[in-house]
Length: 196
Image (cartoon, rainbow, N blue to C red):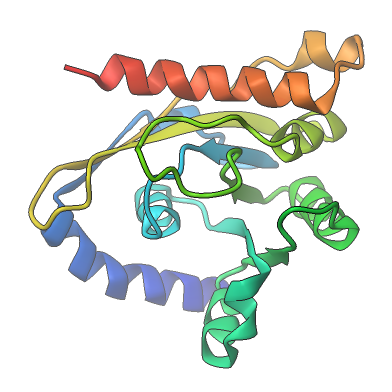
C-alpha cells in the first residue's frame, strides 16, 4: 500500500460520498491508533469497504474476493489501496499468511466475517476466518456496524465498538468458529443499539 495514494483516494472519494450519503461515525476512539487491528464489520453493500475507509483515520487492508483481482484496472487500484485476494469457499493458505503478516506488522486488516454481502440486511452465520486471525495474533479485535441503506442523501452511520477481550478464548485455545461467533455477537450488539 502506498499511503500517499490511499490518502489521495480517500479525499477524492470522500468528496463524493460524504455529501451524497451524509456520512457520520461513532466510536472511532475505540480503534487503537497504532498496532495490529482486526476490524470486523457487517456487510450490507459493495460500498462497505469505502465507508469504513472514509470513517477511519488509519489505512485499512481489506481481504477481498479473488474475482475482483481478475479485472486488470481494478486489480491495480485495490492492490495500491492495500487489499489482498482470498479464494472464497476454500481454505486459502496464501490469504491466511498475508492476513497474519498485515496484523503482525501492526496494520489494520478489515474483513467481513459473513464472507459475503447480506441481501436482507440481517446478519448471517460467520465464517471461521475472523476467529482464526483473532486467535493467532495479538491484534486488537474491533467490531463495527454499518447502519443505513445507501440511498442518496440518506444517513449512513458507522459504529466502532470497543476492542473485544479475546484473552479467555486464546488461553483455552478455543476454536476459530467460537471466536468468530463471539465477534459476530458484538457486531449484533452494535446494530441493536442503533435501532430506533
